[in-house]
Image (tube, rainbow, N blue to C red; front, side):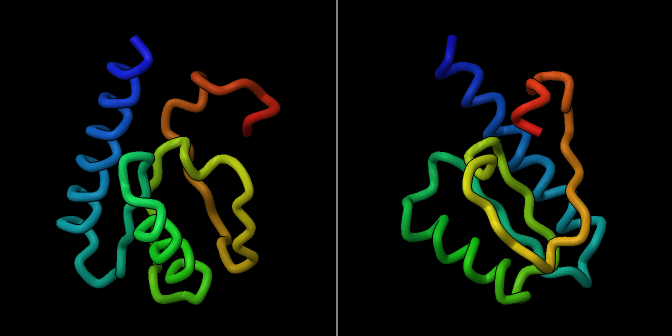
Length: 87
């Protein structure tokens, strides 16, 4: 059940990423999810921190330890799935 939930979360993130790229071609969009190699996740996050990525699509893998002072807005899809402490 957990693996199925993670697979659904990943597919939703990939679909969102692809839709955003199609709808917002002028933005530099990144994607982070739990199945990316750690080095690739770190590279995407570093690019986001440095302003090389304008919009970041991510699964819950990003929920812990993210400090990006320049991130001015966060949209959480299906926020009802999270506890208040997680938001």
